Image (cartoon, rainbow, N blue to C red; front, top):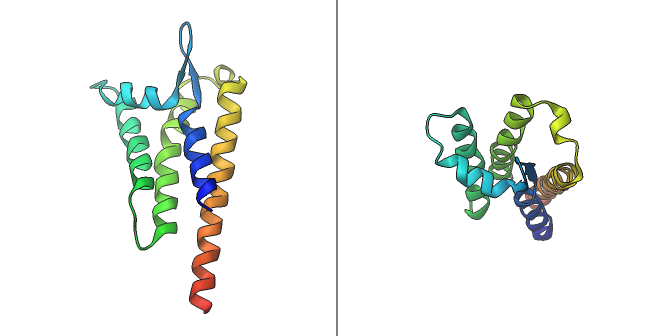
Length: 122
């Protein structure tokens, strides 16, 4: 189960956003945007970083935390997709890591819920 979390977080960090000359890893974009004051992207960068940090914190209700973390982490991506036309995101450096992130993180959440329910039955 932990492998899905590692794969999803790694793929999240390696989502590439096309810059003017070279693609920029999403994690670096989040960090740079975090210090870009007076910009709406700063709010979403804070949410994305908060989602990553939530993954590193242990909670009793782990699947609830994982759902909140997923929502926080996906919000900057949705924000970019809304702000910029979809045609700008049609390249494999964005699509493949994004799909891997979403699929593996959802699998991770489903496994957490199944383990929690199995523990409540016993």
